[in-house]
Length: 271
Ligand code: ATR
Image 1 (cartoon, protein in one colour):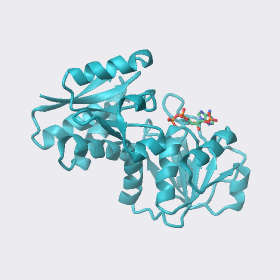
Image 2 (cartoon, helix red, strand yellow):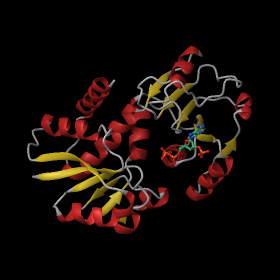
Image 3 (cartoon, helix red, strand yellow):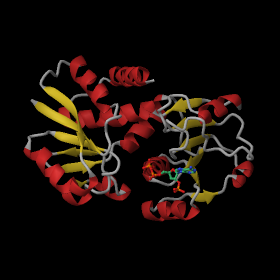
Image 4 (cartoon, rainbow, N blue to C red):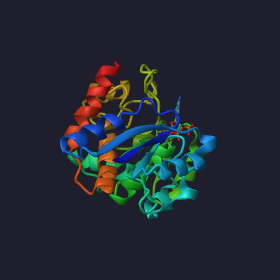
């Protein structure tokens, strides 16, 4: 049996088993299985070793372990630059981060041009790091708004990218093509919250990409559409980061549509 899984704490809500197991079934990879692997933060080193000793091919890594696993793996250039790992291959103990590919890949799949686009990133945590890194590489002009401005400044310095820190008020003087929500605001269960403040005009016609996918349609996405813009939820990014991990482990191209449908179905059953 080829075992893979996701380590996190908690991980019970993860959509990854549903989407990977559906992908294995679709490709006839009957000797592969994807499991939930809850590991508390204080035993991460020992937990990783045990999973490896049990013969796992690899794992995805989610909150709160993405940084904590770094000392125990051979992180590639990307994971090192981001300071975060999301995929490990135990066969060579190499680790990478497929979130950037998931994010940029999903924007591309939606036909969104990034070269020279004005992109406003909301947030400066781990998710924002992946977004800013990918957007900078794709040649976007990046503005970052974060509740804690210092963290946005630090993110820019850590990644060594060109971007500016803005306040929401500044955005009224900036033409915005794309807004990317990398905060957790609006995520289930606080579905009535919106990261865009009531007292700041919302950019007309801007596309919004919301990394939140629970719910699939957030308040922010509703706001985008109310202002004549396109609204894209973050499920595609989740699926595409998973698809990239699937390719690393199995060597086969992932059936993205199958994975997307399995993830959607899991969300539907939950709600
Ligand atoms: P992740 O790894 O998912 O990015 P994180 O590193 O905890 O999670 O980052 C969460 C982001 O959401 C941060 O940018 C955070 O803002 P701060 O840097 O000021 O903490 C933002 N965030 C979370 N709750 C928020 C709220 N209620 N209002 C505004 N921003 C919020």
